[in-house]
Image 1 (cartoon, rainbow, N blue to C red):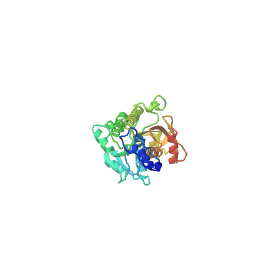
Image 2: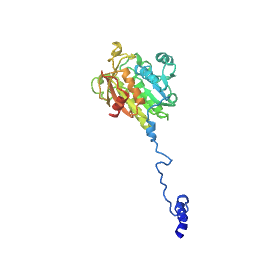
Image 3: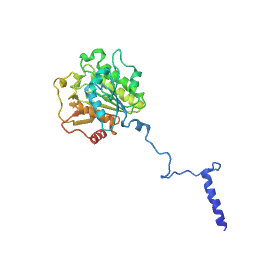
Image 4: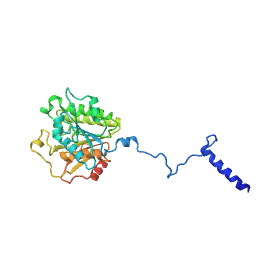
Length: 311
């Protein structure tokens, strides 16, 4: 009888430490798997480097160039993505005519010369974007395209650096892709020794360093795409590939290798697909790679994932 009467008291005593803080000891609270509560979430670094998603804003610098046009078209044509594309161009009317897409916003910004955009204007253009593509450039040797200060140092180094710094001040940016060239780390070797006579590869390498530095400070993912000599339309450069309309084969197959190790031609369309994959593919995080065309069929999304993972 006594044992039964003590049972309620013992049960109450066992429960008191769980709810009363006046006792000298307290049983730890053990959360069971089926109970609610705070769950672990990906780190801010992981979130910051994740791919662009449907309806995201993407800003493209250099969209009227050959690769830039194709990147813009590919992004606008991605099924179900509905990306919000913003083009930064020195001539808004020419950009609208070239791209011929009423769903694209065009911001008039000059990256070089006396009327170049301020840092604040660059940042405003990027504001709200999760992806930034930089596909700017000029000719390797002095031509009319250098008029107005559009030389390699001004565009490939200084302008790219300013864009990267502006992007680092925009919280929403998760992915930045810079298009440069093979040979940036082989300037003492032929044929890059000749190509770099006026410093174009040095300027591109400086631009790469600026993007990587900005990405390290801000926490977003960077991709450096180094294609071989660009061939195939749209033809916008004053070079032999343009003069002879070199197409580079019927397929969009590519060889991809980390670093700066390849040599050859690269179709603009294949290069543009690489840029888009750098924005969309989960496996493309903080990579720099070279790219040349081959006669194989184009890589699938899984094929790109494997290529990125192998670097």
